[in-house]
Image 1: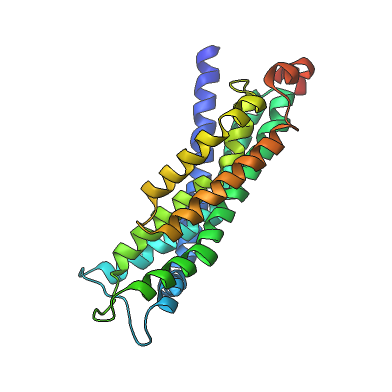
Image 2: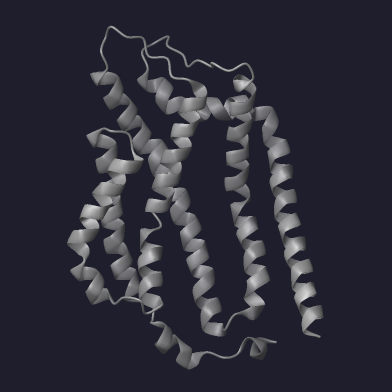
Length: 250
């Protein structure tokens, strides 16, 4: 009986993964014809900062094809992320307690929204600020022509850095929810967190003060947001008092 249950769970997991992959593939097929336009949109902050008439370059033979396709895949992943998370939620929800269901779904939703907000903040604000700053201090004797593949790698790194940075409130809430730390303890380590935030920003961002500040300052502010949000989420011991077994939901 236990083996049959385990196999049925594996089958369900396979089916849900296939649904997520099919959704990703369908969206990607729709986006492929617009891959070049998507890259142009992604490159807009850089193109605005470059001197008039300047363009990016492609040093590889198939790079002009592969890079836009990678951009289309990135966009398809972001667009299908809510559906993928819904499939993951549908798979694990039957095995959760009532109080866990009430907590997990808002956290998953909030983490997704915060990640997307981090990407949007990076694209609309950070890129415009950093690229203009770099262009202004660049020697006038050189011709700036960024490689499109290097630019994509830079963008993906920055998107990931800012997306994860905006997850700081979720991390704070989960640490307090699991009882690993208290709000008072987190307040005590606030000065150390500020130092850590600036160290992280110095490692993951370009070696300029502007981009480092644009990552470190939001991280510190989001840490404070997490402390406020943690006040409204009970610790595990308190939440367990009103919990019921997963089977009681049936």
